[in-house]
Length: 74
Image 1 (spheres, rainbow, N blue to C red):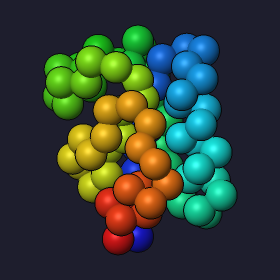
Image 2 (cartoon, one colour):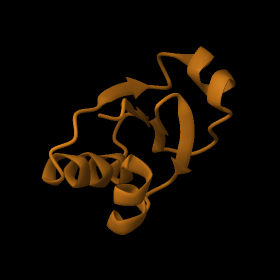
Image 3 (cartoon, helix red, strand yellow):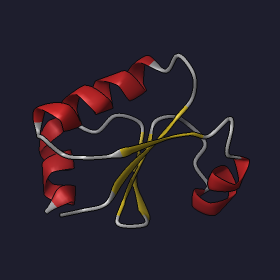
C-alpha cells in the first residue's frame, strides 16, 4: 500500500476534492497543513495546494484527474 500525504492549506476546496477522491478509492492518507509545517514546503518545493506526496515523492501539485491518481498509486 502506498504512503499518501496531502499537503493542504486552511479552507482549500481543491484539497477537499482530493480527499473525497481518495476516500472513494478507499486509500488511507495523512493530511499535513503546510501553513503549520513550513519545513514541508521547503522539502517538497510545493507552491500550491494541494500537494500530493506518494511514497515520499511529490507526485501532484493541484488536483489530478482520478485516472492519473489511480495510476500513481499503483
